[in-house]
Every structure is written in structure tokens, then in C-alpha cells.
Image (cartoon, rainbow, N blue to C red; front, side):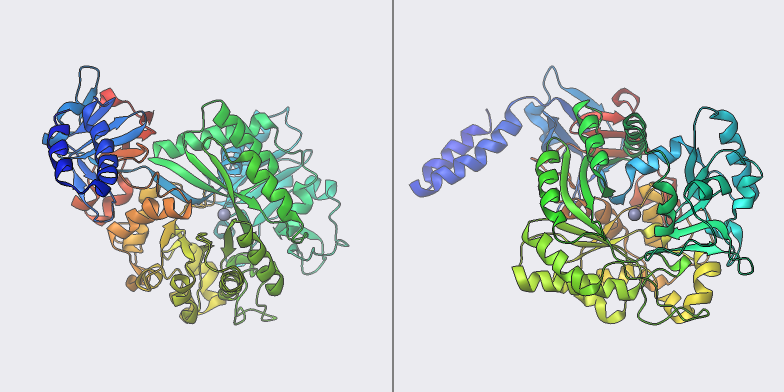
Length: 576
Ligand SMILES: [Zn+2]
């Protein structure tokens, strides 16, 4: 009430026409200052990520929203008898982070299924599969994933014989960590009817023994679907368990928002059910899967699903179009050929003119398009499609975005800003690991390899950069990703080689890409993504100040407490 007194003085001095406006604006801050807050965090290094990138000492929360950001001294009447006050003792606070490209349900199911991620070699993978068979005798199939192509050596593919040796009697199907290759045993191939006589599907490849022509057990892209479609679908209980697992992991990383990069109807039902059970402690934007075998007629069903599932913490407002594959199996679409026999250029998934029509129609219906594009040809086709939509529909404020962006033709870099397309990078991939030095360099050549993941150039062009992990393809830990964005080096090796140092991103931009920019691509930037009065109280308390440490230690950062809408969803207030 104290604040009202000078206000009323001010009001008398204003022209009558301004009184309404002014009283509206001040009434809001009066509500903020007048009643006590539910929760106050003070004595912090609060990095707000507001437009000025300002710092604050204290933040106050009431009814799940931020009602004050400023100095300790300014808290005033916000601290009442019932207010929980916590001393941050100088700890850094950031806005709750958002992962702009992630696969929570399949990743969670994989982590809870036969999880090969702990293995590093083919022998270790086989040992894990053997153990999975022992511990799940009741499961008709052994399903899981998390293997790395690099574990099998340059040019080598995993074979069914390795799996047959440990599981001859039950079908086994295991996804590579990037989700683009399946590894099946003989039983699974037989159940899918895959033999030497089976032709490759149009969108994939059955890897074969060069002498006998027999399938060897590794299945690229659409070829893997021949097996998964005969495997039993995950039950709704398994989906729920998978999503719940992932959301808890994300909360532990300080993440309170995400964009699921590909959802089915069953996935949307899972999000709705978990939200109904009050377990969805993230804001979830869902990208509905574009069926390449269908045309524009599928948009009507997408609109119905958007209406049905956009409620609570769920927004089914995006559509995922996968425009190519990946470099490692030569399915990413390139302008110039791969340096291998036959000089392939990859597989564009949607015919470019059809892509323009699809994106224009989706844009007209208010959908955001979330593209998967890795190769320079696919990226250009996606940008051309957005250009066609902008020409046909005018600016509609939709944040179309392209994920992955491994190889961008230099001529296309300015087009992100010009077309308002958000560059959705997975920064963890932007250092010279085995994938780059052993698998990519030989078939892409030095010049193209050195231009990969041009995060710095796209940022310098003025485009909006957002980050996502693509988990379970790679770690969902945002601090590992930030460190690579800042250093362009392996976060596990303090003195590892720096890959394309001119593409490094300043730390404030790396934080923005996980907070306000990710919120922007999710259409949630008015409500989340920064620590500002009126926004939801989504924030994370960190164990170290990212600006005060050696950049090589960024990936070691731990989250102590995550608040989602003012509620602790990871850590405990009393233990700060
Ligand atoms: Zn993905």
C-alpha cells in the first residue's frame, strides 16, 4: 500500500486521458509489491536473460508467477509471515531451460529397455544384449538402442551374427544412437520377411553382404521400419513410464520446456495423460509427424489433433518434416556428391515442389514447421519452402525452424535471418569426435568437413539460434552442449582439439539459445524463457557461476534446484 501513495499523487498530475493507462500499469506492480510472496530467493547471482541481459539479487514468486526481480533491499512487503525465504548465498540462477529438439518418449523407453549407451565397443554391446535377454525372459522381443556406428570401425556395419550368438531364439532390434540405423538379429529379419530377395524400400537401404547378397543385419532409415512395424508397439504404460523418466531427467538438468521433435497420436495421448496426472513438469510443444506417403489431405487430421491436445502444459502446434537422412550412411542430401563409389548425393525425403506446397499449406493453417535437414541440398530445399510460404501467405509470425544444420551452403546462411527461420542446432555434435574424423571426413572431404555446424556464422548473420539435444541421440545435459558451443571441443577432454574455432559462440548467446530463444521457437517467450515479472516462475539454481569459471568447466555444472511454475521439481528448497 505504501507504493500507492506516490502513485495517487502522480495520477493527479496526469491528463485525464492517461489516467486509465497509468493506473492499469501501476495496479499490476502494486499487486506485485503489496501482498506477500509465496517464495523469495535472495542473495543470488540471478542471470535474468531479459533484453538487457541484466543481473538481479532476488526473485519473488506468487501463484507460480514471478512478481519481483531486483535487489534484496527492494523486496519490501513481499516478505510476509507466510513467505518462504531462501538465501542463495551467491549461487547463480538461470531461467528454466528449454530443449528445442528432443525425443522424450522413445528416449525414455530406450533408457528403460535394452540400453546400449553404457557400452563403447561391439563386444560390450553384445554383452549388454545378452544380459537384457537374461533379465527379461517374459518379453517376446528385445528392443532398445544406443549403439554408436563408430564402435564398428570405419565403413563397418553391425552384423546379425553378433546378435545371433547371444540371442538366437527371440527377435532383437536395436536402434543406433542417432536413430537412423536398426541392428537386427536373424530372427527379427525372418519375422519381417527380409531376405536377399527383398528390394530396398524407396527411403532406405538393407545393407547386404557383397558376395552372397544376404542381409547382414543393419538396416538404414526406412529399411529399419520393415522390422519395427512387425514388433509389438510399446504399451501405453511403457510410454508413460518412458515420458515420466525423461521429464524427471530433464528437470534434474534445469529444463522446464521442450519441443518433442516427432509425435504420433499415441505419443500425444501419453503427454495428455501425464499432464492430467500432474506429472508433466515441463511445457511441451509437440511436432506432429508428417507422413511422407501422404499429401496435403493429412493436414485436416493434424488440425483436429492440435485442437484436441493443445491444453494444460501441452501444445500440439508444430509439424515435423524430415527432409533427409544423415551423413554417416550417405542419406543426407548434398549439393555435391559424397566422395565414395557411385558418387551418391543422398536421399531428399520430400520432393522439393511438394515440400513447398506442404509448408505453404501448413503455414496457412497456423502450424509451425520443424524441419530435419542435415545436408546442404536438404537445407536449401527447406529454406526454399519457407520462402514459398512467405510469398504465398505473407508474414504470419510462425517460427519455422530447421534442426541439425550440419552442412549449410555459405550462400544460404543469410537466408535464415531474411526468412525468419530459426536455426536449431545440436551443439554437442560440433567438435571433432570419431564421427567427424573417422566417418565424415573421408567421404565429405576437408573443405566441407571444416564448414560443418557453422553456429557462429549463422549467429553473426543475425538469425535466431536455438539449441536442442536430440536426446536420446546424444546427452540431454545442456551444460555439456553449452560448453561445446563456447569451446568447439570435446567437453570430456580439457585440452582436446578445437574444431572450427571461428564458429564459437559467446557464453551469453549459448545461454540464450537454451532459454529465451528456445522459448521463442516454442512460442512461449511471453510466458517463459527469462526471469521477468509476470512470467512463470521456471528457474534453475546452479552450483557454480558460468561466467566466473574456466569454460572447460561449464559441462561440470550441476543443478541444485529446479522450479517449474514456482514449485520445486528437482532438488529441495531447504537444502540449498
Ligand atoms: Zn531428432
